Amino acid sequence: DKGNHRHFMEKEIYEQPEVISHALSHYINFIDHRALTVSDGIDFAKVPSLAISACGTAYLAGLIGKYWFERYARLPVEIDVASEFRYREIPLSPQSAALFISQSGETADTLASLRYCKDHGLKIGAVVNTRESTIARESDAVFPILAGPEIGVASTKAFTCQLAVLAALAVSAGRARGTVSEQEEAALVKSLAEMPRLMGQVLNSIQPKIEFLSRELSKCRDVLYLGRGTSFPLAMEGALKLKEISYIHAEGYAAGELKHGPIALIDENMPVIVIAPHDRFFDKTVSNMQEVAARGGRIILITDERGAAASKLDTMHTIVLPNVDEIIAPMIFALPVQLLAYHTAVFMGTDVDQPRNLAKSVTVE
Ligand code: M6R
Image 1 (cartoon, protein in one colour):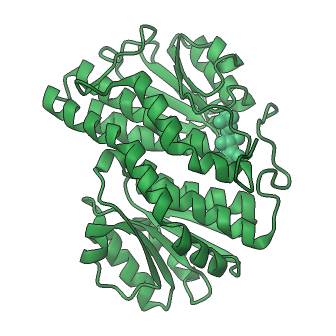
Image 2 (cartoon, helix red, strand yellow; image 1 turned 30 degrees about the vertical axis):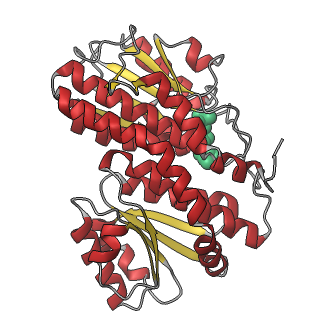
C-alpha cells in the first residue's frame, strides 16, 4: 500500500525518520546514551581488521562504514564490490571478521564473498533487512537494519538504515577497543538519537526547492556529483540513484579527483551537484567548486546553514540543510540526494518503482 504517495519510492523516502528511529532503538540506549553491544558472534575488541563487501547501494553504505570503523574504532577495513571481492584472491587473516551488507540477503555475489571469507575462517556478520535470508542464515552474527519491506527497486530507506546500524556498530566497536571514550560515546550516541527528528524537519521543508531543481535536471544529459570524506560515497550513491530511475548519465567523484580528469567535462550543460556539509573538508570542497565555476559549470550546492553562510560563491542553487553533527551528516544529506533523483524521474515520466532492466534482488552473478 502506497498510502498517500504516488510511488513506493516516495513512501519509503518519507518513512525514514520512523524506520531509522526503530532501527536505532535496537543498537543504542537512548536514555543513558550508550551504544549497545549487540553481537556475541564477533568480538570487535579483538579483531585486527574488518573486510566488508556488498553490491550497489549496500556497497556504498559499506564504504561510508569504512570511514567510521577506521576513524572511531581504529579498525583497518578492506572493502570491495562483491563481484570483485569474490575473485580477487584477497589474503585474509582468520582472526579478522567480515561484514556483508544486503537489503535482500540474497544477492549472489555478496553471498559468494561471504562463503569465500567463511572458507578462510573469518567470523561473519550480516547487515541485512531480510532476517530470513540466506546471507543471514550463513552468518555468525546478524545485524538487522529493521527498515521494513522495501518495494521500490531503488534503495532508499534500506540505505539510511544500513548507515545507522553501521554508525552504531562503529561507535560500539570503538568503545570495545578503547578508541572512543565514554564522553565521546555519549556525544556520538546523542547525535544519532537526534537523527529521526532532523530527518523529519528536512523532509518537511525541502520539497519545493527539490522540485524546482529536478525540473532543471530532467533536461540534462549528464550530471556530476562531488564530495569528500563520507560525502564521497554519498556522491556515488546520488549518481547511482539518478542513473537507475531517471536514466540520466551521472558520475560520483571524490572532489579532489576533479582536476585529475573529470574537470575536462565541465561546461554549462553539465550540472555539478556538490555535497558539502560544513565539516573539516568544507574549504577544500569550496575550492573545487571554484574550479567548476571558473569553467562555466553550473553548481547545485547541498550544504548546511554554516556552509551556506561561509561559501560566498555564485552557485546556481543552494539546498540548505540544518547544521548537524558529522556522524549523522551522511544520513541527513542522503535525503535531498534521494529526492532529487525521485522528482527528476517523476518529471521524466519513467517507471520509478520498476526501472527498466533492473531487479530488486539480483540472485545471479
Ligand atoms: O539486496 P541487496 O542490498 O544485496 O542489493 C544490492 C544492490 O543490488 C542494490 O543496492 C541496487 O544497487 C539498488 N537497486 C540500488 O538502488
